Each structure stands twice: as structure tokens, then as C-alpha cells.
Length: 444
Image 1 (tube, rainbow, N blue to C red):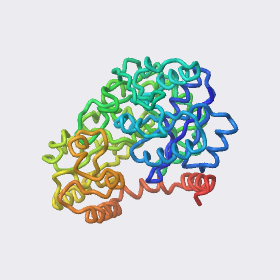
Image 2: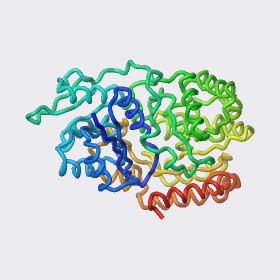
Image 3: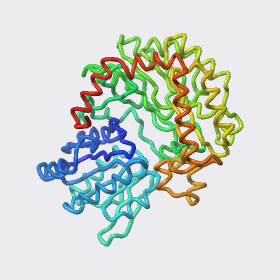
Image 4: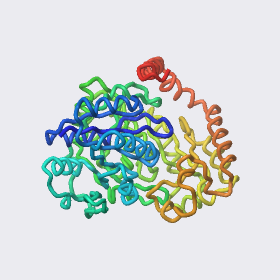
């Protein structure tokens, strides 16, 4: 079967490698399907239309996050206006809202959760005109348009059994990371899910439980990617450090194989999970930056969201990381439920004292699938929430935006920020590569 994988544009113009679709590509190719892929950040609809005609596409899979769901639906509607090709939706948004997604007239199937094995079973069933009722985690419609739903089992497969994501269907070197020292970079996941239950995070609903790949499997993938000329890796796990021993083993294996790589943890690490003693080994294996999900410096406020705050440990992590030449980026929310102007300004001012390399401030928004979302989903305009136009505390949204600008401006008072800037954003190689990518894709 000829299958097209599509990554819709994000509303915030984010351009990142579609790792989930790359996993689907590997699974489909292993089942001898012919796979094509397009990222709509780099092409217009005419390119999609031409490829559908030229390659006689028989099934289209569209990945959807909440922040590109509107664009995903727009894409499916345009396709259905010209072709009668079945369309399957998957990704985080569809896992959270499968019933609403399958009711869309231009969506024929919805996959809930990890879709590697499910999409291959779906393609096989469509190709052989078999029943769909035995395919788990699938929502679909019968010939009369009635919505049918198959049970969603708990994940039993191991991540180590999955084929490495196919990084050729979406050309990896077309993607750029403005916070990377060494372009291009490869995103990688070593686990799925999280052991924590923070009220503002949907991870537990998306993945049910935490599962990890084997050390050998992870480092084999890194070694394979390195052979293609890529030396920087971004760990994108929800909870990379859930198991200290596992992370130590990964570092040891990288060192043992003498892999000269550079890597960073781009998702916010839960500070409670990081043993400062591990930082030396992480540094020796090539780690040069970690991001801490500090969120707020108000302990009482965080406790209401099922988050701990051990300021002493955070300071120890930062100091130890600096000793081993690891940059530390801090992630902070402004406008958490229950916040006021005083607590927000406290977080901004106290963050300056933490010796972070850089601080990233975001206006808090409720993420679909989180406990907060479920408890408040009838209380706000969902479209405005996605656009970051709603305040969830007593401080008005326009004031929050001004505070965010002020918070970012405070980075200029941090001497470590200039080292961070020169090593990454303003390094000659980085600027040259980013400009080349912009030019390549007609963005400048």
C-alpha cells in the first residue's frame, strides 16, 4: 500500500523533526508498505496534491497535537475535497479527544496512543478488505457513518522492540534547533511516560505508565545516527531521569564505545529525579546542557499542583552542573492557578539568584488531558486557551504578557546568559546553518 504521512504546521511556527511519524514510517516499511512523508512547514498544498496523484496514495496519516489540530483538520478537508482517500488521525490531541476527532466528517480513523503496530494492522486490513474490529485502540466509522470504538489495552510491548525511527522520510538535516551548539541535531526518546502526576501535565493520560528502552538499544541508535554525520542529540523524554541507574548505564555505554557526541535534555527535568552525583558521568558522556522544570519558586503554590519544591537541591544541581561545564536552563510558569502579582514577581526576581545559564518563562495555560484541564474544561474558551489568551489567575492576561517580557529582559543581567548565547544562538556555525535552512525553505 502507498501511504503518505503528513505533519501539519503548528500555530506558533514551530519546526521540529516529526519523531512520532518517523516511528510510523519504520513500522510501515517493515511491513513492506511504500511510505512517503511531507512536513507542511516546508511545502504548500500543491506539493501534497501532486504527490498524492503521482504516487497513487491509498492511505494518509496525519499527526495532530493540540497546537496544530486546527491546521490538521484544514488539511484533511482540503484533501477530501479532491480525493476519496481514507485518512487516519493520530498523535497526542487524538489520544485525548478520540470521540470528538472521529466525528469530524473528513476523518475516517483515529489511533489512540502509540500507533506503530496499529497503523500497520490498519493498512493490512484495508488492503485485504478485512474487518477492523480486532484492531485495538482504533476509532472508526462503518459504512453507514456510525462511530465504532475498539478497546484500548494497556501497553504491553516493550519500546526496545520498536524499529528505530526512519529519519530519511523527513530529511533530518532540514531541521534546525536554535538552542543547539552543533547543527544539525537528532531528537531521540529513551522512554515514554512519566512516574509523576503533576496536575498540569497530560503525560499520565497519554502513556498510562512509564516504559523505557534498553541501554544497548538506545546507544545503538545513537551510534547509527552518528555514522550519518550528526553529533548532537536532544533527549525528548517526558521523564528521562525516572531511573538513575538506567541513565548512568547509558552514559557508561556511550563512554565505553568512545562515541564523541554532544547531548542535552531539552524537556524540563523534574529536579527531584536528578541525583547531582550523576552529573559528572553525564558530562563525560557528552552532556553539555540540561533543562530543569522548576515551574515556580512558590512552594505552597506548587504543592497544590502535586509538585515539590526543594530549593536547596535545585541550587546544588545547578552548582554541580556548572562545576562539570553543564549549562542549566530553567523553565518557569507565570500565572499558575492561585498566583498573584506578588508571587509572580517573587519567582522572576529569585530566579536571577539561581546561577542558571538561561531562564525560559511561559504564561501558564491548561494542557488538554491534564487533571486541571478535565476539572476546568467547561470554564473557558478552548480556542483562546490554545492561543494563550486566557489567564488562570487573578492577574490579567495583558499584564502577564508584560511580566513575561520583563522576565526575559532580566536574562540580560545574567553574565552566564552571554556565554550561553555565544556558544549556541550566535555561534558562527549555528547562524550560518540556520540562515541556510531559512533560505532553503523560502523563509528569508
